[in-house]
Image (cartoon, rainbow, N blue to C red; front, top):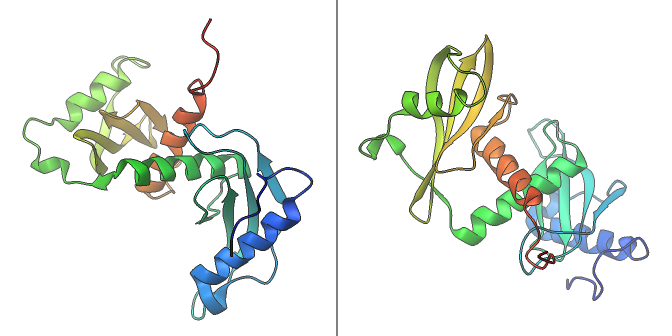
Length: 207
């Protein structure tokens, strides 16, 4: 099924809904939903060559598994679907953009332990000291690591002031996330998408 000719807008969301259902049928077969929830529209994409997208929520029911809520994202992008976790529709867009970035850039998981010279504690200390100097860092571990065209993006997990957090470290855009109930690769993609959305669009006028 081909996508609608026009990009998502309030007038043609029913057409994009039909396209999303067709996409899910192709991906999920007999487990695909028969109907989708209300649409959430996002008019701008931070990704070059992509455009407006919309997200529909649905319930995924698989044989032998507990039903769980998901979002499907379609529009001027490559469609995909994601578990809801505890994400808002706007956060799902960030997750989608982070996922698209990883796919386009060919990002792959890697073993940072095999990279000589990487010191997780020194890396964490460097980042934490920028916001909370001398804050104790406990129970530190590498939760995930990714090779981004030779740069190494690291997701560290630790306890800060008794709270478990992720630290986006290595060559990644630095940041923290307290949502450690999310798998580290999901927290990383969500973080990437949020960073991309904060950056000026490629076609923004330069003063």
